[in-house]
Length: 189
Image: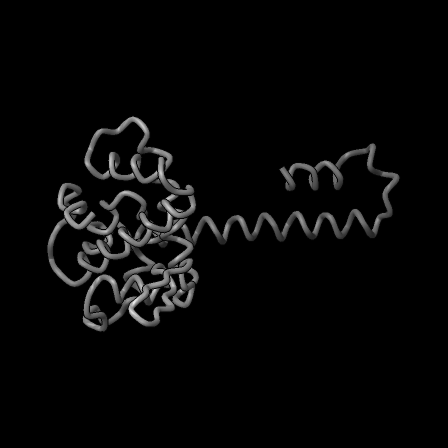
């Protein structure tokens, strides 16, 4: 929409009243936006190609809420797969676990810590929000679990819980040669 408006400003006779310098700047801005769109499209193609050519990315992509961008980012960021002892440590590294301030045997949990990789955490949470939008009519155990949680909790809390679960599943898939099975993902829930 912005590009169309800029094209109209640059080429429209009605906008001839604008200062020629302003019109020249708008023409440069339109060209820059066109170039940026082309570069973004090129990077999107490269990400899709990496996703198609990587077996581990394909396995991660089977998890609802993890797409090509998230899968390739997880594979690129994790590096050494054995650096995390379990899925909870991986989720904590991403900042998807609650802050905890416990004392005297009383456990006090707060919001997520947000201490990890902001980019990966954001991708996982947005992927979870996208997956939450598609579970309304499904009857599989995962969707039913999410539906029950939605009735009790705020949508943002449900999205973070699903992102946490997806991070743990991703860790499991990264550290083993197993294939994602949605029926097994709810065993701990």
